[in-house]
Image 1 (cartoon, helix red, strand yellow):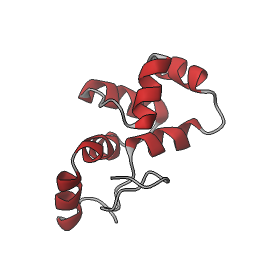
Image 2 (cartoon, one colour):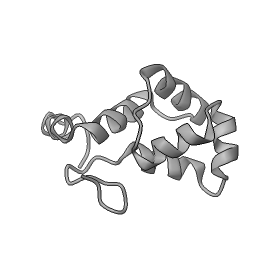
Image 3 (cartoon, rainbow, N blue to C red):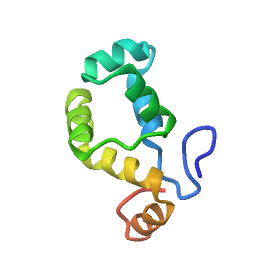
Length: 95
């Protein structure tokens, strides 16, 4: 479960937090257009309601100049706290 800042008890930042930080003051509509995604889908990603496909994550990472691995980890750890804990224990994500 994530706190209000989007950081889980496992210390992994949520995909939604990463996207909101990347969007900054840009409107969600403009951000969605820049990503080539629908407003509804971007909203769902930011709120943690939907899990994007691996190819969507790759496209978003490339467009935003972010590390694809970091977005993949954030997206899947949003859905699986056990995965987040395992990756942290293995030193693959920072707390």
